[in-house]
Length: 404
Image 1 (tube, helix red, strand yellow):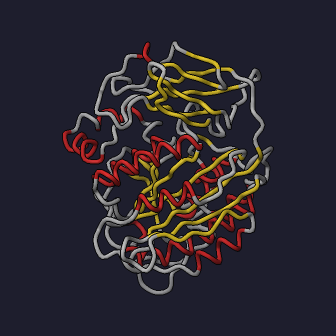
Image 2 (cartoon, rainbow, N blue to C red):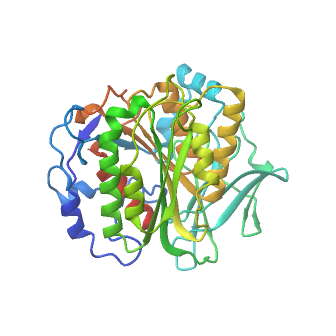
């Protein structure tokens, strides 16, 4: 079930001025223990539409921001829903197809002696002395460490695993499995590490021809998002982009490096157009590689997030699947949240894969909806109750939540 809401960025700016640190609004969350995605913003600020209203959608006329609509779903915060999906034959088949199996993980919440969240802490999970997964605690102090993400195994033996935080061992661990209805949180007190009051945000965008109708609106949304977040965050904001197509096109990937001069990113986005991509799969793995290895992420900032905006899956070969597995592990190790934004053309198998990317990096899943009338038809996401929002408002509130 979905609930359509209107979020006004202009109205939000009024209440966004009372921040103590990070960005200027304390948001409600899905679950205060283990979700960083803000909810309740629309109810608090009221109003219809958005600050950059562009009139009616439908994919015709000149593109304006504030037209595209979307929803959000966090599978870690709604673990019981995901666990039930794993018992569905079709969804189990998607796991075997893509060789991603998000079933068993250790979820930690790191706090200091005053019970304030500790972000920027490197954490590592080992099995019988071998490294299994590495992550970095986010701005809420949370991190997810996956026991067998690429192994088709339902069971784990907790005694085989050891958690390392700043070199210290922890062995009596609570695991979250398909049999647990809620996420089991391992709350651990640690000494804080120094991080900068800043956030790095990258936009990794499919620029193939099938995105033409949506990318005209998306470009305007990205520019409005960058402008608004730059105005409202007391945390320093750096932005970067990766645009990608496919092998044989005019280019496979191109990017703009991180910059705190947000107009540089806006100008780069404005120069892009959709073209190429003659078959359905695209060079998603090359885009992920460019985003991880070519962009100069700051490892000392409070948060790092990559919005992966696309309408097609990677090519399905063993080599590319293996590459995706390693790259997603690399994003998690760097503490970079992946937030997929699924546009028209995404099928159920690709939805599964993108939700795996989000869970593996402690991110969240965003999906464009048909409510705006922009672009081709969008499949209904297999999720529980969610709210329909303007896409630019949704992405802006996520960035603000990650930067607080």
